Amino acid sequence: GVSNNAVTDLFATPGRLLGLERFNLIVVEAGGVARQVGGGAFAAPTAVGIGPNGGLWVGDREEGLLEVALSADGTQLETVQQIIPDGPFHNNFVQLDVDEAGTLWAAGARSIAGNGFYRLDAEGTWTSFTGRFFDPLQNTNEYWRVATDGQGTLWAGSFGFGVARLAPDGSLETFGPDNSSLEGITSTSPFTIIGGVATEPDGTLWVSNMASVHPLHVRTPDGVWTALPAPSCPGFRPDDVEFEKIYIDDFGQKWITLLDDNTFGSQTPRREGVLVINTGRTPADPADDACQYFGSEGSSGSGLPSTFVTAVTEDRDGLIWIATDNGPAYLLNAPVAQGAQGLTFIWPQRDVTVPGESPFLFTDSGLRVNDVTADPANRLWLATAEGVYLVEPAAQGYREVLHFTTDNSPLFSNEVISVIVEGQSGEVFFATERGLISFQGEAVAPASSAQDLFVYPNPVVLRGGAEPSIFIEGLVEATELRILAPHGGLVATLSARGGRTRWNGRDVNNDLVPSGIYLVVAVGQDGEGTAYGKVAVIR
Image 1 (cartoon, rainbow, N blue to C red):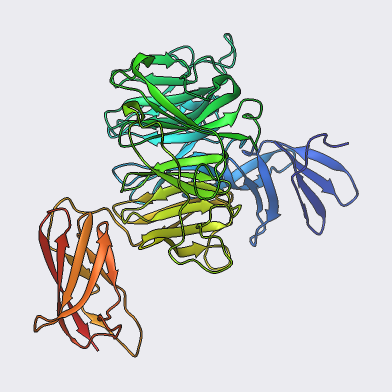
Image 2: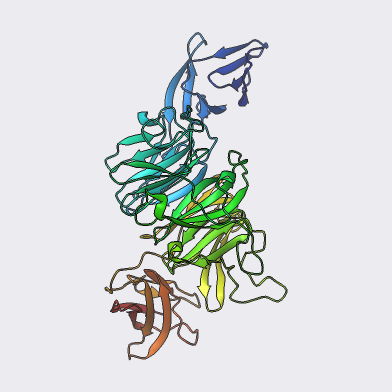
């Protein structure tokens, strides 16, 4: 009878049993007498124990690790010390973004008490934007969408509390029905559900507003909000769906994933395809808009692999890729406003078909893809329910390059929810259901014009038959490379996409090259000029 609340942990000592409830330590003496002891700094405790020095420690979801002590009369707790790790306050993330400065932004998962959005700067320092640390975010929660713009502004969308704006000067402001065009679930309710946020290069913000009369809202760079009605497209029934994630392509078109109106509030909603809208010359005026709805499944390599569309991205060749619960698909992008109403998604084919297997890479295999993004080398990273895949274009289709799982990598979970690439360093971030982890990829952003190449390591020491990894950086978007011997003879040729590539130290006959100084010649394929570098090889 000492407590009616949930007890989250127990710890036995030779003379006492210790228990935890939300605000109190429970002490059960050896004779069976039990009491509550309050006064600790914890509010969401998960674990209690005795440290090697005899101190009493409490682990708390919001307060970190606390060493506490009983007062002399045993009726109160006093906090001795508090330890908070340098990291985000929560480890569940559902969306990632990277800004132009190389800063990572992470949106927390729904239904996590006190969650917010989180920043990892280029120096490796984390900042947790939650109500615990920032007054403007008090009484807000469930920030599950993030987007940055070219002006240094971060926008975060929440499930119930509108959007938050973090300005470049560090000031925070929230927007809801009282100070924007955003709408609550009823005309009198402030509960404002955001399905997605996306920005344009000039700072224009687009927001999808679930359970509202106006599913789409736009905010111009001067701060003017406008609510837009649902577009009218052949086969599209706006009353049956809710607008969710937004992706803006190079034409300025808005690709929006759709949820079933009856299930959008659940943890496992049904999905209803994808909608693309061209908002014309005047985004706030729907009169010049055009749209196309993709809402039915295809077959035999054409059409949607599934209407369960989870994400949209555009690669460096202008292909729009979608992620579904039945693999990925792509289409050659074009402005729908210019009569391109015959757009059809295509299932990626394998570069080499194996007899007895599907010719399609992942598609039509039941692989749930949660997210997709393209790196600077135009390779695709797929976040899936079976780990992470890296695929690249090949002569006859696409081929798998890497597949990371918990069995062959430090991934915390095979359920990878979001993936993003930081282009300047090539670092790839994976959000899993159990935390965030990154991988140092090879692809980096290309140079805008030909420049001196950076080749490393230099010199390269070859021992035995070990194959080296010789990296060449400073490349333009598309490059043809020639490796030349000291006497001028051609040793090897490479084709590269993005700012960095790798040479394995082998010649055209696949033999390791002998000792010598090798000249690297990089020719830009779009007229950017020729760049040079050197590397010494020691056998």
